[in-house]
Image (tube, rainbow, N blue to C red; front, side, top):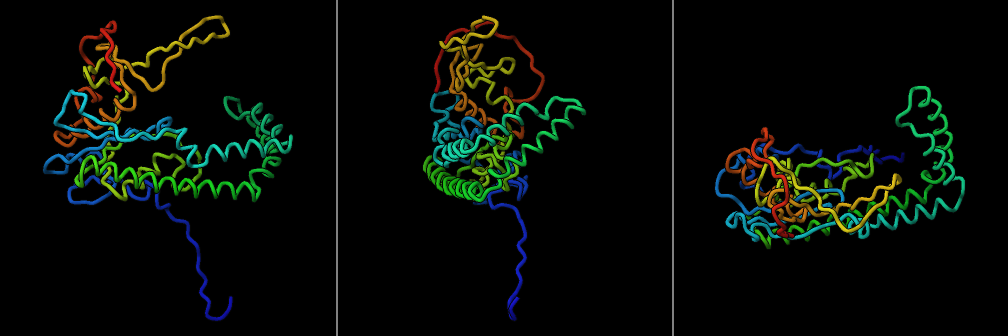
Amino acid sequence: MLEGEVRVHWKSGKHKADPNAGAPLDASFAGRPHGLFSKKAAHTTTGPLPSVVAIDPGQKNIWCASYYDATKVDSRGEATKLLNLSRPQYNRETGVDGFRKWLVKAKKTSSRFTEAEAVMAEHSLKSVGIEGYESNLVVQRRQFEVLKYLYGSRTFAKRRFLLARRKQRFDTTFVNGAVRTFREAGGDDVVVAYGDGSFPTSMKGMVGGGSAHKRLMALLSKKMRVVLTSEYRTTKACPTCRNKDESMVQPKGNVVVTYRNGLQRRTRIHGLSQCSCCGTLWSRDYAASLNIARSFVSHFRTGDPAGYLSAAARSGPRCSKLLGVNTVV
């Protein structure tokens, strides 16, 4: 060091978008411009019910957000879908698809990379005894020495850095646009009821969490009031008949799959749910966001979730067949 210089020690800290940097608050969210709050904060808060925007987070559809109008209960205008962010859209706009294509192309530059991955797949460490685990571990370590020339290269590190930077830019732009949309729908006094579902991270080991919806939630909580709301039965309970003894199921489509044993079955349609009692056909994520909004309103007023969304013991008649089909998307 030269005279007069000061040595600065870099200390790893929480990522600015890391939701674990601060625990959700149980205190009232009234008068606060932004923050992350637990579901207890809904009942702690006094005063009139604020405008509610409900978000159903997920893996295939990262966000499905709807504006909830408490004055239009049990009507088609009770919830209005504001935005939907699908996983394919997120992967395309953040460059994940491009990164994966580059990685596949990079592996093809040398046959030893593809051979090493094939050997590692054949000698998995899952579902084996202690002897098989030890022998497979030796094989895995040998193949790792080959793959480190790809995953430990400067080119791979640069690609990962560019991918992370593009993700940060998209997250910021998307959340800013979502905040404008939410405030246009609900005004300045708006609260976001965010489903408290837990999902595995897509890229383990990343500071701030690899799961996209967690990063978006953390950024949103820095601009708006976000209240974690119970997701229990929100994707299973029908918002129309509110029967707590039945669960909605995915309807079967026209695509027929033939299995190895010769049996043929129609595949179920992902993204749709049908009630076995009233027969109403719902967009799965829209129904979940509507139920999340109702759960938040019930917590705000009574401190408990809505009756048909509670974890209490089920009781009552069960439906044996569909009574008809009504479509709500």
